[in-house]
Image 1 (cartoon, helix red, strand yellow):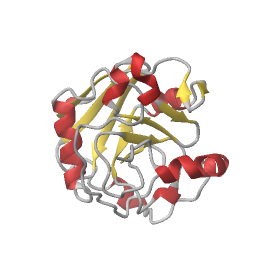
Image 2: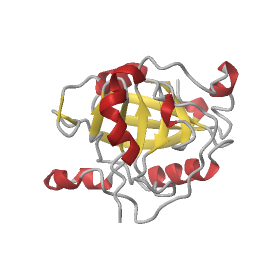
Image 3: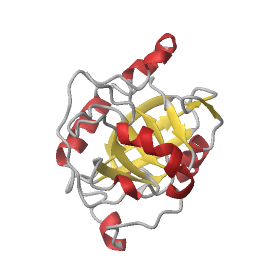
Length: 206
C-alpha cells in the first residue's frame, strides 16, 4: 500500500516549486469565499504545540466528511503526542502521523494513518497561507489522518488536495514552526510536538 508521505506530487515538485510557491498568486480565491463560513459549525480546533497554539476554523460547507473525520480523531485524542514531522519553509508543515509518537520509528514517519482512508473532497478553496489540507499519496482517496498547514501559498495544489479549514489564530506559531531548522528529509532538527488538538466551541476561544 502506498504510504501518504505528504503527497507524491508534493515530494516531486517541492524542490522545484519551493522558491516560487511562497509568492504564487492565489487562484480561485475570491476575498469573501476564502473566509466565509469559517465558523459555521460553531466549533474550532485548538492545536497546542511545543511552539505555541494555533486555532483552526473549519469549512464543513465544502469538505463535510473531512471535517467530521478530523474532529472525530481529535476528540479521540488520536493526535495527542504526535509531531510535525515534515517542514518546508514557504510551503507547508505536515503532521498527523500516529507513528511520530514513537521516536524509534522515525524511519517510518510519514507512512502512518488511522487504519482507514477517506474519500477526497476537492473544492474551490485555494491553498494559501494558513489553510489546512489533507495529505495523501498518489491515490486521490488515500487521505486518513495526516494533514498539512500551508506556510506559503502553494496554489498548484488546488483541486488536488482537500482543503478543509484555515488558521484564525496562531500565524506567529505557524511562522515559528515553518522556519525551524531542518535536515533531510525535511525533518525538524528539534521535535515540534503536538501536545493536543481539542475541538471546542468557537466562542470559548478569545
